[in-house]
Image 1 (cartoon, one colour):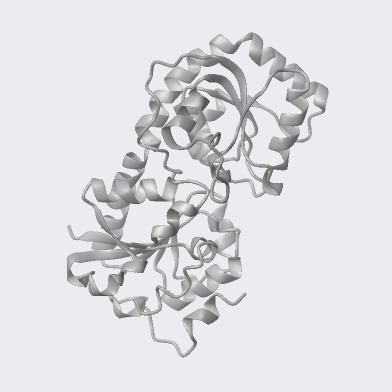
Image 2 (tube, one colour):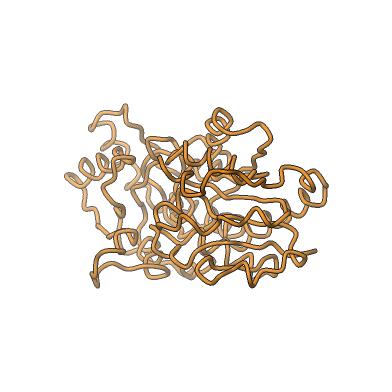
Length: 332
């Protein structure tokens, strides 16, 4: 089949994590797609007849990276257009304008809650698929050696206030190792901040890792990375079918619990850490097999191929020329 053309930006590495790039690179490595960087005058390099469809970068990412004008001539390509949306709750009005302007055919979302929200603001012709957040293909080896009981890694963000509360409560009663989240790195030259495999290896050294859903009830990449590294989550999780097996080996807490209730549950978990670790080993194998960037790329490529070959998107919803300037779409 013809490949997928991915239009993204070299600045994507500046975002808080690498999950999107990991997915793109896996699509390329497996022969499903080619990447065209928006800074490289991609329109002169991409031959539309060689491709079956296009993946555009989501507008929230483009706004964060100040890459606003690169798609202004995308309407010249008469191909089905897909986007992958993680930050659907950020700039919803911008997303609506983006989808309308480009007549996006299909949206891939990470979270089960997303279609409920998006259906209220986006055109009826848009279709949705949920897919799991891809984790890195480069994970720690399976010979885990636990050297720490509880790890805390994360920024103090208002969207994850319960995680901060858990750290404050638990660390006053138990030793909690702190690890700077790699997302803190863009504007800091701190040799103590580690990334990539080194970061995941630190997660793998702990029996438990404090992690929570956000205030928007969405999963984060660490919901999958932690069990993939053979560790167990302490915290709460969103209601997401992709996390069904993770639930079974999570020390579940919720914001309604008192500090005493939280400490009692954590204390009991620590007493049974070897049992959690035993279950974590089996869960790790499942997560690695099904949620790696390589596995998710394969599933997404198959889905796009099916949708394109169905014929539903050919000669329909083709981007139309509009009188307004593209920059107006980003004017919130």
